[in-house]
Image 1 (cartoon, helix red, strand yellow):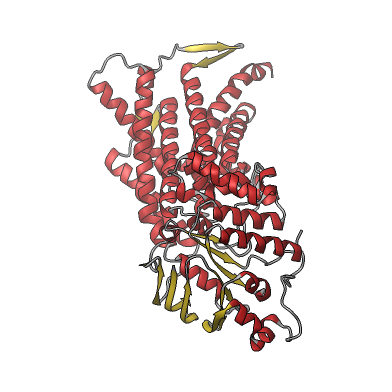
Image 2: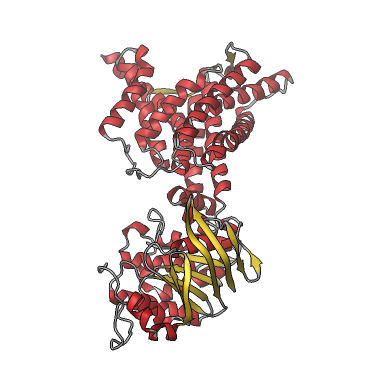
Length: 253
Length: 313
């Protein structure tokens, strides 16, 4: 569904991605792992057209999308749940969700209402707060809003940039539960994560990014088992069993 | 003292009328600032252009001796054409004077300097094509001087009522558009987080162009109204009106649409009251004093929020 081949991306004079190859097949959950400054966010930005690759191609459903403006790429069925939420704080929850469905603005209102009900079903807290301004929501609620907003577009491919960041462990569990549910309902998902345990817990396959290059790729199960991966990225020894307790950063209510 | 009190209601009414026009022009500054974080210094010139376009429509109608000049249809025609013309010039401004700079990563200063240049260009273009002498609006043919109302002891001319009414109606319409429509939401989204708006699928360049069109159209409408009221227009009128409207926008909170409307009305009232109680010669000084006080005491303005430090152009 999504294919990056030989992608080289610069930020000004600095080369961030050095010949990246990545593939996401329909129906999968793929996770992209790596530490800070490994190029994870740049990969997302390259897919979305926020930055243009200097070399290489990005294909979505068989068509090249590198070089297209962001709004054109997004209208083909790709949505983003950005790092640090980035919801529209000055707009209400409802307005945020409506903006999420912007690419579908010409469809019948009944269709959009259906999706609204669907996301309220997944995130009941949002229904309660529908008329509140986004900025008044807690960190966890904003994450829910960011996810709901992305889902409003009925994307075929959902990109998620570090969904566990800044969330309490219990909330991380909830969020990843929902990600699994969304996937089962038919959405292909690419998750970028620093919290490898949690991500690999729900993914089918994983890639490990280091210094702008993919160094390992395998099924999620294999990655979880591989010793050197676990030590380097999960920071645990063989005896510790991976579970979804998630070692997220400091709790955020 | 008692004669001051006698004319006070009159001055308040006039202050509101003037203020609503300031608000109209201020909206142009505030909308552009909200979306691009720049002050469109050339905005005063679309105001002037609107006045001249309105003048031409009226002059043409008079020349063709189209009898029965009733403001009910003449005014919308003048406003409509002036708004369309000003709106298009505003869009062209963005396209040719600002966009080439901010898309190539100019600092915030680039578009500002370009705006000053564009302002000089437009002023001179108007002067060279329309002449340096003022033009006179034959308002009396449209709004007979005797046409007045008596509102609770105050004599209010239909002209002033129409002026205020039109301005308030347009501001209300803009507010409705920004708050309730998809276009309005996309404008607010771009103003808040341009990158995320694009990720939602919004064509940011087009939204910016529409914002310029709307703000400039309102400025042009204000030009027609001011021309009708003061009956004299010249190529330089945008300078003073622009600075005052800019003050109004800052007073209300630059970037805030309701703030621009509020700031306009307040400034109009302050100016009108200052003329009543102080020396009328200081009329124009009032605006600058208000500007300085606002920036010193509460730079975010009455309804404004603190603007992020990031270098956004």
